[in-house]
Image (cartoon, rainbow, N blue to C red; front, top):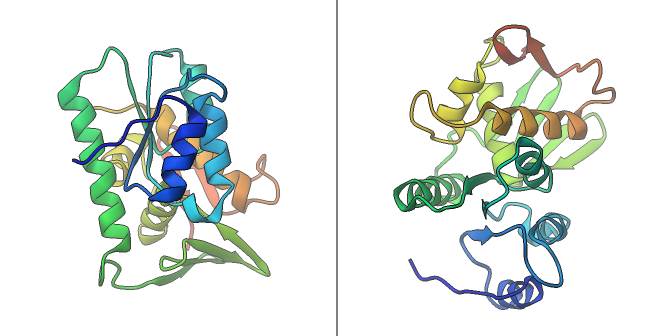
Length: 208
């Protein structure tokens, strides 16, 4: 890998603007602007909506991790660094990004299920007259659920299929937070979701 290092969020922004990276690894605690703020700032910019972002952080409490995912991160790994695990997450994120943008990667670029139309070329969802942009991970998660409509999908199955975690690894909160963020974007009322339904004791499902 060719890696560039920034000592602050502002320096990182300058580097990213000059040359868009294939992957961004962020810490939470940084001078001037913390990693959460930087992540949110990037996700607000259409140029970086699909940029893979991995948090590498010493903040290990569930609420800290959820804040990072809510800010728009695709995945996270904890300090002290376990190098094989870290490199595995890097490979998975880069592989997913390559699959998403590669020629012929999607046999069917536009998929419609249950009132949702997903365009995998633009990472946009169309619901009625609403056009909704998705992050790369939100796109992969929604597409997988649409491709397996009417099937209850457990968090563990989604961790394996969407995030490429080995069996019986990964944090179910990773799935829960991304489902919640998708619902916030797609649903008119997140308390009574129409599109992404909870199957109690199992996981989530989209009805076709």
